[in-house]
Image (cartoon, rainbow, N blue to C red; front, side, top):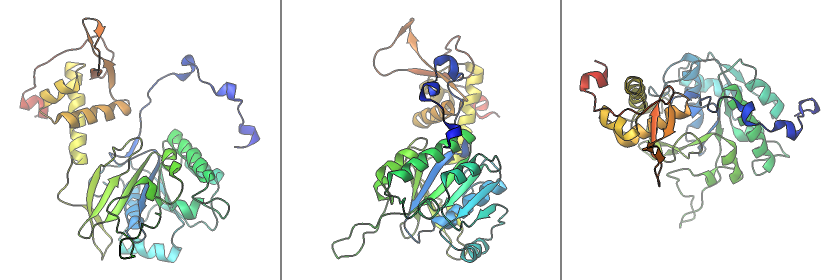
Length: 347
């Protein structure tokens, strides 16, 4: 921040009359996977995180579903490749059979926060890839174990969120502990403490995904933070010949397309019947109660639904709050019987 950007802290305090709309909505750049701001992809060396990042870059640039499952917001992308020399990186693009219509930067020196902020706020890109946190952001004086790198990530994340830009960034790991035979243990899952650097890095980013090789498949799992529930896991497979990635057939959770469809059905139902509890919505739509609750919370975060505390005869209930969700204002709460199959499915 330059002296010309300085604002006295008293003037930074926002009063109720200054804040305007309370919820402007989060922006899914990759539905159910990444929002605007910094999202980390942490993995062991040689796991394939760079090729997975390349695939994500291609999907956003071309507007195709990431892993043939996650819908993206199409737009121009910049990939900052600091881990691999240009010749090696370009050969991977060819191996992956990518169109490579995005912009690429092979930095000759560490980028400053001013450089990165300028790129994020340039309005040229909806997403910026950084491979990796260590090679692009760290210097001899500022490593991953310095508090300065956390402050840089805080500032970059803040700028990216305000600009509505996704910054997806790979991260290296610390060496795993040794096993009883003196060799290194094979990680089955990544935790925040495994990421190279001080632990407070986790507070400076939006979310983080871990990637591990389990032999016959790969585990892409959420370490969580702000938008992705901890433990969310997608099983992936990769072709060694083309470095192609795809979702395995068997998954333990609702697929993105199914969740998106359920979200649409919830909105349609509430348009017709007004404010209702997630229990009533799930009963009417014959949907899983927990996934209905998750979808309602996500739609609330996006600013697509409103939520109010349900009262009983004008008095608030004690204990766990009971919420109702809806779209417009809050004139009343309607209680409706389950819809028939034709109206639920929109047939």
